[in-house]
Length: 126
Image (tube, rainbow, N blue to C red; front, side, top):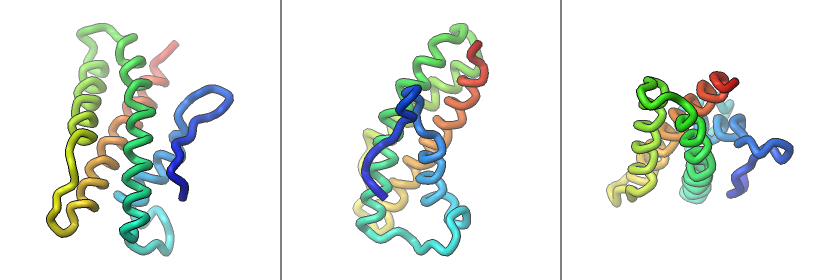
């Protein structure tokens, strides 16, 4: 697993499949057969990947939401999700045992929600 964030080089579209794989690694370990809990080094890498994915996807969701009417419910939901993602990125992991895993999972849930918004807003574009 590398620390790079990938996009489709032909279109500049975020690599949603890679984002789903990263999310699943933390939120759905059953999606990755025969996987052990992440080591401290793997968790650090996953957290960096999640942060990078969020940094890449947030402007894309913001651009797509901006194309919707100001009173649009999908726009409001996407913008609320962006606000939550920004708060989670600004937060720090708790120093308590398991705080780093909890933090990574919060980032994964924020990314998962943004991916959902990105996909639905992309389908809605003409």
